Image (cartoon, rainbow, N blue to C red; front, side, top):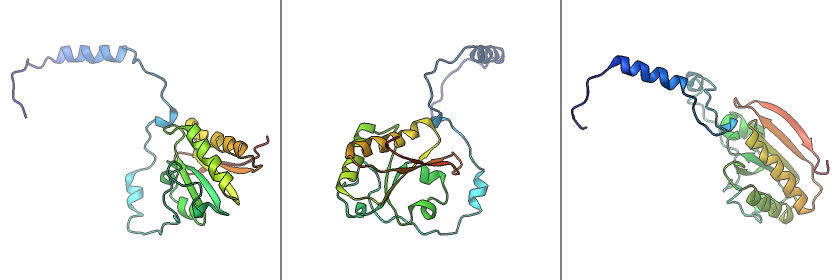
Length: 184
């Protein structure tokens, strides 16, 4: 703590400064809708469910697409989930609804390089016979980059593989589910 001399508080000057600040337009770059802050539910709602332990359905490690090996045994004959990083946090029932019995590769198309992701997923597709692929992403525009990554990787792998594309809203509810045929 530092103690020093200061000019006496001038309420009129403060009010003028605040009024001027409200009139001055804020210079800002485009802000991604995915970065918009939102309170989705009151913390007391979450507190009601505390104390109930739900077992994890995770069957592999690592989970990040950047870290998994394309030759990992958990990809052989697997049902693969390509999941945006935020999805498991938004969906309270993600483990039981989606993860159970599946392999996973998680990533963020906004923060990580999509070209790297395309190459990595292509390697996984070439090295393994997957039973299915499901892309699960949030509703924010940048997150739909996972769908693009899946399309490009399937095309680069030379496989003809439709996949499910699931969009989740910020409260964790599924908005849409569609089958994407890479030839369309």
